[in-house]
Length: 126
Image 1: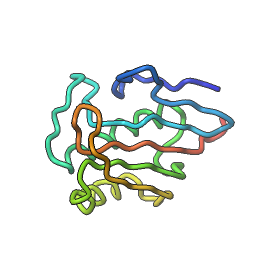
Image 2: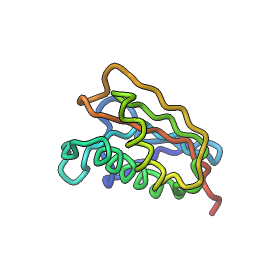
Image 3: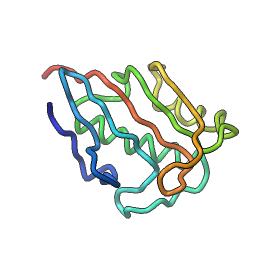
Image 4: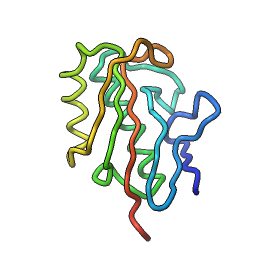
């Protein structure tokens, strides 16, 4: 197994890694909309937060040697299911290959953010 770590995505908030590659598959931790440059949450709307989450995931995918096109499964967490349509609009710009997905509403997310996404992706052989 190989740990995936990049300073271009937020540091883990607890005792976990940004991701692991095992047998050619990346398993990412959930990303929330922390701006890694400032280590703070600047986005306030669901659209802005979803965009920041996806940019963070893009950096983790890049560090792992893969990309959005190789994502096979996502798990999405929303603090309010009323944000579902707006979340989907931004999500669809990044996940153009339409990976399998679960999307659930949860009571609370870390730092009271509006969304979190984790991915499973194939890692291309080099």
